[in-house]
Length: 314
Length: 295
Image (cartoon, rainbow over all chains, first blue to last red; front, side, top):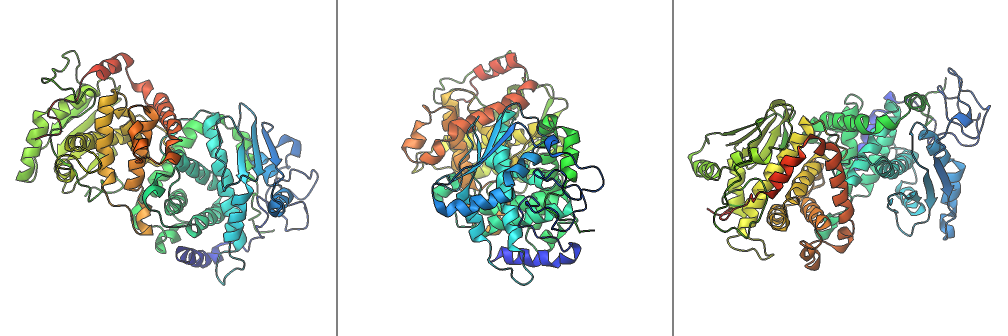
């Protein structure tokens, strides 16, 4: 309860800058009860409900136009029934369907299976040519770590769960993208995947960036532990390093919005000074290596969609 | 102190200890086999776009360091070593006094700056003979200095050649260094990798959480990164790092993959800027010589 308390406090200070957002427990957006929530102000991806609500402005794309046809999805039945509720929640929220929509601009040269499964561990590393797997164990850990009740002035627990979940999904997908497009990856691959995920997370406007980045950082903060000896041989960076890397991407991408990270001393000034340069290097790497594989028209549609239902109802 | 915005500094472990000797510079060949001084191949010309400079030290005590580096023709050999590289502009490489044990690349002037203090620090931290873990003084001085040069060269290449870097650039520069060390045969690889690894093995790791905000990996992480790439690149020559338990099995299992990742990145982003014929020549040169690493 160190950093996160301050983080929560800092975010609370921003409360006035944020809309009283509709809840975000709905991972990746609305669930199967369209029309009951506040009407979103922008187009919303609703894969299963053609002819549903209120997607003003530009005509909403027909569901069939969306979704990456190269992405297959599966919610695997867990062997251990304790994970069944998690599977059901993910299915109900259509997490993988939403991801498939989210990935629609990506011109994949081959099929990519994205699945949720019981792994016997927190993570199941991606193998070249294989599937992306999100482990029920990891989701359970995220849910376990989120505080049960919101502290006064603190972060809503849903926010933490959503941010951490989005981070891990995009991280795993990033590793697959490196492999599928045979991209040159300099630096440790795990860090590279964290950074690509973070870069994607800040491409959807201020509010999404604020929420998912803080949620992701929270999770690493809460997972922090002491590293000694051979712990440092791990392919992943320490939780503290990942925490700072996320804050640095956030600050580098939008120093005005994330100024509070420095003001509150969550991100040390010495590192913060380099974050803009770090962010532009990351952005350059994305433009140089990934953008050529992206359909720009679809990308714009994805970017204008209201993934987290964060907009003020009108 | 150069402004943070202006330079990509390589902060060497502050209390790194390192050592002394004659340096070598670039890389290549048989170090333990040195017989009589190996003549340099006359046909290898310096890269005309590499400008070298030994700058007079601010403190008299560094004069001896400068003299040693100059006598060993460290920068002259580096310019030859870099001959296969097609550079769009002049890359400056200089040795100088910095006021701290460091080496750094300054993007605004395309310069690699190697501090006399860093070399002196290597001499100070190197074991007198052989360390308890079996590292020799020569390895540490030679490998440590070659590592500083290659690491900064990595930053320079990323900048000058517009290389996309997804991960942490500091780790990427370490990968350039380790990967380059592996291109000149087993003996060079042993000396340079082990020497570089020693400097990280003997540096203090972050103790507070805030210290983990540094964009450099912890020295222990860098140590494992070097020996992992070495093991991944040559499991015979570096078999002992696993046998002796320096590299834990869990990590060792991933090292071939890590080496291939770096090789692919190198092939896609650096190799297009390299003259392959000249590179073969450079690889055949015996860069390390008898007495390298010694006063």
